Image 1: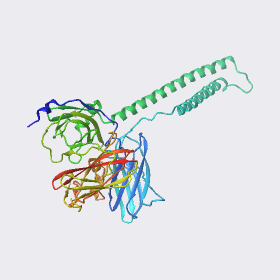
Image 2: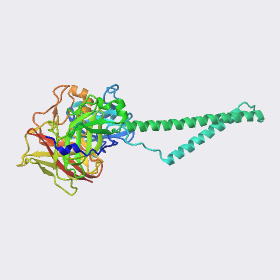
Image 3: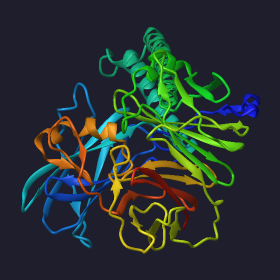
Image 4: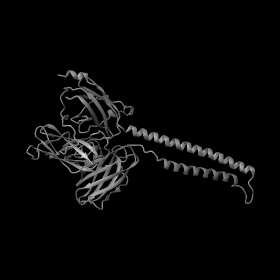
Length: 494
């Protein structure tokens, strides 16, 4: 039975594009995995403008690694198999397990950082996807513009004077005075040169403005577009992209599955953060999505929608929806969510006890912004003994969603890190076939499938770095005995 009040949805729905990719306000890439026999934790700090320099940090957990080199290629398609001459990463003189490198990202779109590792166990490779796009448009400082203008004007005046003098005096014999005809020739040459210089300046400024406008258009293209929501009944939601560039390029028609779904939709009731849902709409032939709403309490929900296009570029679309209470329909096997305590910046709890007595313990120290770290969670029985019945949840040991209290940050991460599995599969295609690369909790028996290990560890590790200080809520999702569980933690990051 459908709740009658559901028909009166307060459809005050606002979905606004935000300048984000893959995650909101969390642009850096964190990845943990194995390059052959070598376990690595890779952090790629992406630049704010393109072209720009990305800083790469690679941490090893043993003394077996002797050398690491890094290079950038396209994630897939033409050029993806032709890497430039690699840069040798520098080993830290203080920490021998830390290597650093700097790489130029020269183009927009889906790229990958290719790491080549040499050590006592031979050579191996690892590919880490990177979404490359400009996050901001840097204006030239006024003082620098003034200096360049003065220098250009000086060069122009010098060129005009030199050409005028050459036209006036170049053909004179030694000791012969300058005639009125020569003076007139020199002035004509200077006027012609002035016109040429003026034209050069005009077209140079036009080229500069045109290039700036083109840069701004490209930057806008890589921002997530707005989407529209309409109801096909009291509890069924239709999701469509309304932005004209996406309509032109049919991005929503050419998505690829990530963890078995074309879209991961997250709803968080704000400002309390006391309701959370992880849902998976159905893709239609026209590029839209349909979602059978679950039982939702009334309130204001902020919405995050993760998709990956066919090039491997991940997007997060951001919006909000106000609705009344609805009974909704039944959940699919991968949908999950529920009710939780309100977010509380003063809490210091590191253990969340679920309804069935399951304990989830977060093992952490002081949390610092802009610091790569491993988030450790332990799943325990009510008796505090390690849980032994964890099951794969959409192909992973766990999924973790991190949301900042002011909604400026949203991240969807896994034991392998912040990289979507769809992008990772494209990046590591050759490595998987060669058996050179694997991810935490995963075994790859062949080049076409990735399967979970037979027994899952109750110790959950997620590489991540909080992008800035503030209060965050962390949702830890895993599957146990056929049931998807969600634990919540609040984190005060300094």
